[in-house]
Image (tube, rainbow, N blue to C red; front, side, top):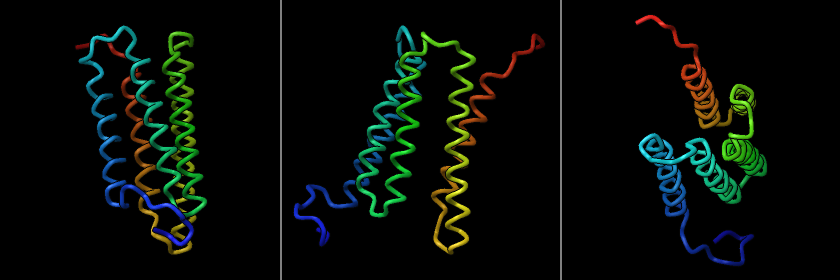
Length: 155
């Protein structure tokens, strides 16, 4: 129990991390198994799972000690919530515009993480988690671009 907290947490920190990680992995597995589900609108299904992931990210932000760390989690949660909401309503948007907006959102998030990485590295603070998060966003961008590439009629 911290000196600022009057109440005792039901789960200690390692158990909280395990629960958050387990829920995140469960959501990831559901997204990866989405092609196997017989759903009418897969984008809406993935969007709903992203909304749950955003809520998880918001709650995880409350656990963080530093103000900038909380704001980072909440900003990422906001981007995830926005993408999830857009995917839930994907039928209302043009596909190309929606994909470009999602790519732009990932690009903003990646740039933000790389900025934090460089900022903390200059101060001598461990910042590997920012670098990994930025690389993860770039990988997501590349995967979306690879999936959306024009198909050739050859072979």
